[in-house]
Image 1 (tube, rainbow, N blue to C red):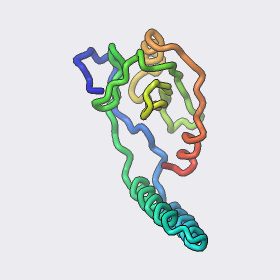
Image 2 (image 1 turned 30 degrees about the horizontal axis):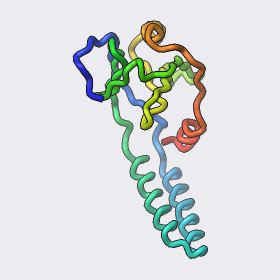
Image 3 (image 1 turned 90 degrees about the vertical axis):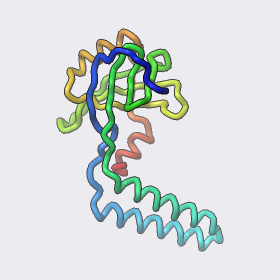
Length: 160
């Protein structure tokens, strides 16, 4: 959704996902696993699956090689904006503030939405007091208990 002319309350920039640099070992492991899966698919006479695995591994390698994109986050009167996309408060089911044990990771807002393509949004809070942002959003969206989903943990494990 495009952003209307609403007043910005908080604004900052940050990377939505930053799982660190992937060394050569990560790419070697991906290549070995993909090659083994392609060979197994060929041995089972499933050439189409072998092509899908090879294409998926290639796409995963290309995505992993890209540096993290810096996003512009804004807390606005109508909702939360990520770059030029606005997520209205009425489309949010609940939110939670997350703090990590690792001091290198900034606190984050975890938001569950009704959007099919973005059911869970995780926004790092950088350069602002997380309690101020929490208090402002709590006026518009109920708080809920959030834990990382299986996919969140899986992507973190793969450092994607």
